[in-house]
Length: 418
Image (cartoon, rainbow, N blue to C red; front, side, top):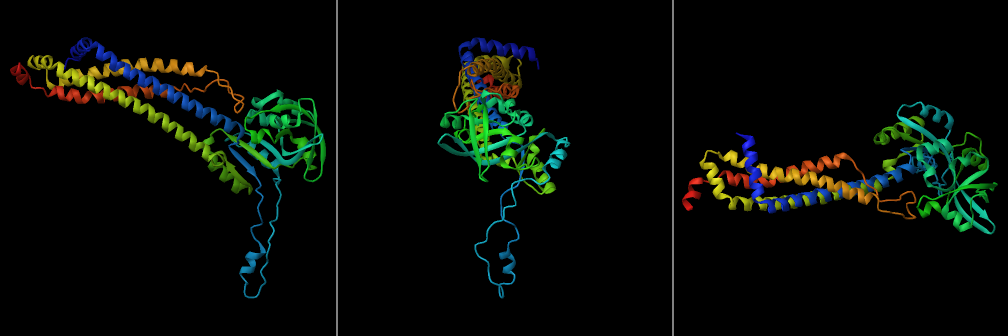
């Protein structure tokens, strides 16, 4: 089989049907460009939302869940129900939110090679007071440097600096809270706890995550300040936040730490299961639409090659009469479809990148996502590789059936018919 000769014949046939060839190539180009743009945008959106979620969510959280004692008297009474009075209105016993021996646990975790870093935390409901206004909210006592390293909270500070929390008796409040109480950086806010403790803290920053339920009630202060506010010792910790190098292993590692430290744990996948499902569905939809576009382009190529066979019956008969086998004729028409797919695919990748770049610079500003300025795009080379491979696969399959038909043409019948 003379591959060079077959390729030359295929190119001459393409030139003879140049208009139809260009139309077929444009169909592939459009399909690939739309596939690249759509997949890049949808995965960029997923990355954006995953980043927003992971920036605020530890891979693993260790804490003490508020729940009743497991061995209640009523359970014991059921074993002797024939001679025992049942106990009604059982009250749960709060074992406390504090993590026992938290400092040693943190020290142990910091030595684990699977863990990037550990961020201890104290959370507690409080009342914010400013003049006659009193609003319930939550204060988060954080290790400022560890929290910044793991969760980049400075990205959400719209006034002030997160490092200012290192000063004593300072606080960063949510934008919604600041707006309601007419507060700004430099003002003093009074805080009272459920135990009656009172404190006056200086506002050194305002944060805006973009979720009203959080911005309206949340605040940050240093771990030391939170412990003093609550009247607790320096070893008082309610949460231990972890980030792993391999976050996929979070569910397994969370179970391991739950058994080891006798603490409640939750991993980010469990805490955000609905969010993960949404990302998966968006990805499936983007790939499905892209594949449908390519299949439609494949039908166009099939129709063009099919028509070309009927119009070139004389040429096919002459080729077979001069010694070309059915296999040679088949490869001529397969070469036609591959050339169309390759040319259309390459231009599709180019235009897909151009369209993605245009989307990437379109302004996108919303109060719900204050850190986002343009539409998100993911330029992963994998999408371009998938695009060109699928373009070649689709066009090859589209050209295979007409090629098989052409290979079975009987030159005697064609010439006799003429």
